[in-house]
Amino acid sequence: MSINPPESDGGLAKWLAARAGELLLAVRAEHGHADPAALKAAGDRASHEFLLAELARWRPTDTVLSEEDDDSRRSVSAGGGPTRLDADRVWIIDPLDGTREFSEEGRSDWAVHVALWHRHASTPHRLIAGAVGLPAQGRVLNTELPLRSRADRTGDGAPIRLAASRSRPPAFLTDLAEEIGAQLVPMGSAGAKIAAVVTGEVDAYIHAGGQYEWDSAAPVAVATAAGFHACRIDGSALTYNEVDPRLPDLLVCRPELATPLLAALSRQLSTANAGSAPSETSLVRKEER
Image 1 (tube, rainbow, N blue to C red):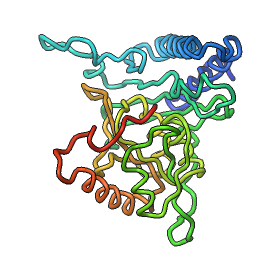
Image 2 (tube, rainbow, N blue to C red; image 1 turned 30 degrees about the vertical axis):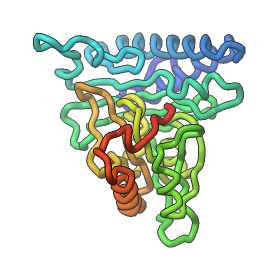
Image 3 (cartoon, rainbow, N blue to C red; image 1 turned 90 degrees about the vertical axis):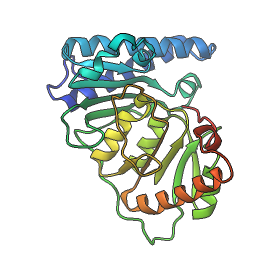
């Protein structure tokens, strides 16, 4: 890996994700797995500090939104608020997506997320560059050299493969899978799940309840650059760099599956809410990130 990053934003995102991944692998090797909590904290801190330092060095006029420095928790009284809301360029990063998987020996389904939001971008999500590093798998998916959506699977007879949380999938997901004859494929972090859609290991990822912008920005940038569909579970657009960075639900899938999956989601969510006031907690259990 070059000491200096490429000049392009996409190249920088890839370089940052790769370098942070190398650092996390070193932290994992140094600390071992005897104390998972200490390993998680050390990994989060090392990757966060590295990414902030390198972004300050290579993009000093840009701003950053990071999981480890959630500025939405700061006071917005007297007309204040996060400075990123006035910025044209905001890097949205998750230094370590999937801390649980990172702390478990032998697991590779954790990731590093680096994405760039631009105010004047033409897409609804306004993400113009992104990279998802999968350090334990030895790869970085990115928007500069995107993988392309595989051949249309409509009518091939094979069940749809849905990436799902290992331990706490959304409450409606099992019912949805039964309705459409889908196969649930358990795996770890959000980044690993969306990466699995892009690489063809699964066909879709559906999430509801408990995510933030940094959980999906880089994976969504990579997926949409590769021709995959990404939206909220009601079909509306994903938007980033909002005052409140909570972004609790999304669908990422092969493009030909978007319409049938959204229709099935609409039916399942209507059933889940029947007879009660709709709320996020009434629909889902909080999925692990």
